[in-house]
Each structure stands twice: as C-alpha cells, then as structure tokens.
Length: 117
Image 1 (tube, helix red, strand yellow):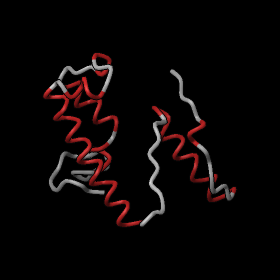
Image 2 (cartoon, rainbow, N blue to C red):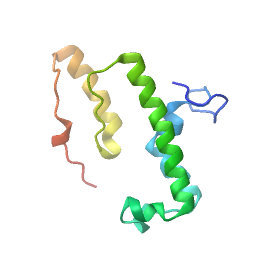
Image 3 (tube, one colour):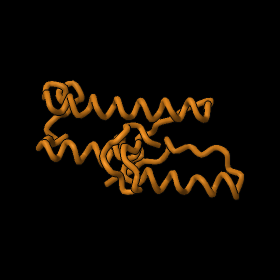
Image 4 (cartoon, rainbow, N blue to C red):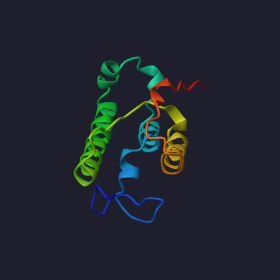
C-alpha cells in the first residue's frame, strides 16, 4: 500500500510503501542513523525529551496511522488488534493464514505467546 507519493524506494519496487515507512525495521534504522539507542531511554516520556527521537517517532506514528486507517477503510474489520510479538511477528502472522484457511481455526490467542531473547 502506497502511503507517500514519490516516497523512498521500497524493496518491492514501488515507492512510498506502508511497509517501508511504518515497519519496526525502518524505525530502528532511523533511530540508528541518528545515534539514538532505545536502551538509553527507559520510558517513552524520556525518549520524548530528545528532539530528534520525538520527531522520528512522530513521523513513524503518523505513517502507521495512515496505513491502519487505509486498512480499516478497505476491509471494515470488526477489530484491529496490534500485539507486541517481537521479531517473530511476521512468522506468526504467516503461520496464521494456513491455520485459518486449511484447518478452520478462526481464533488463536497470540497474547499467550511470550517471546524471549
């Protein structure tokens, strides 16, 4: 989904993709480019004291909001659930598709999933 016209090139070949602007990978990259380590900020409020970090997070949240709003307008879901699933979130999301389609599992509690390093 394109969320920014003439945006940064994405690995899919398009420009301005939701994945590029609102992914955790891009957020980490933007923070790293500006020498901002999340470990230095124990809370979101502490992070907000850093002007550049606040700007990065504000942009990230704005792009995330545009993309989620588009998803809501296109699919009109009853619920939109955002869970902190760590680095395995993509794999878990991909695993849910065959479970739902082929095994008719329509509910899977991912809140019970605990990711540890």
